[in-house]
Image 1 (cartoon, helix red, strand yellow):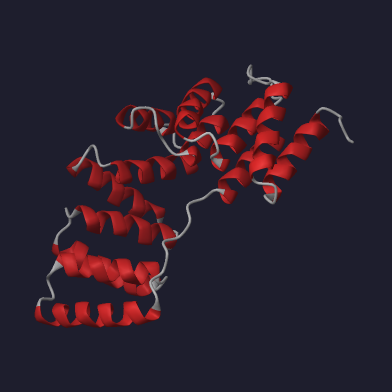
Image 2 (cartoon, rainbow, N blue to C red; image 1 turned 30 degrees about the vertical axis):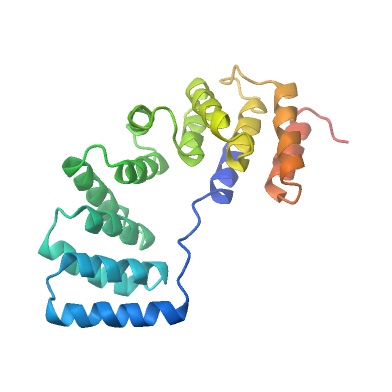
Length: 235
């Protein structure tokens, strides 16, 4: 239970940041221009997608939904429409539509990494039985380089060997990644019976490295304290 809480906190802490919103001075004229174009060509899926993306960045979800629903009704196999449709319906907590959108995307473009990442994350979040196989496929397509957020699900599945293999791949690319260091420290400090990789010294190494690089990150300190508490090192 403790480890589940830690991994949940990890996922919350390192979930993807929202897109950076354009300044108001840039957004309004662009929306006006796109709206003018749509008045002349209301069936232009590309323009609908562009306006929907701006609305999405500005968190105007109802406007996003309206544009994407219109685009989808015109052409159901446009990849950009399907990507945004999955995102907006996920934000509206209608994950069935998100799943349908990303699955359709992959039927059209099986190697579309964004669709595959989104669908994999969704399926793992709802504990679908295909979670592990989807991660494996994504890892093959990405030559063993996938997001730490997705790797975290392998820890939840107790697939420690696979998780560490993928994390070591990421460490070779960036040895200072807070997400990677945090997940490594959590895995090596996991005292559950399923984890043959528990190693207090290695966990300490990654915790100390994390604290050295990110001294003001409260989650690292919290996880380190929980690790020491599990070892009855209360000081």
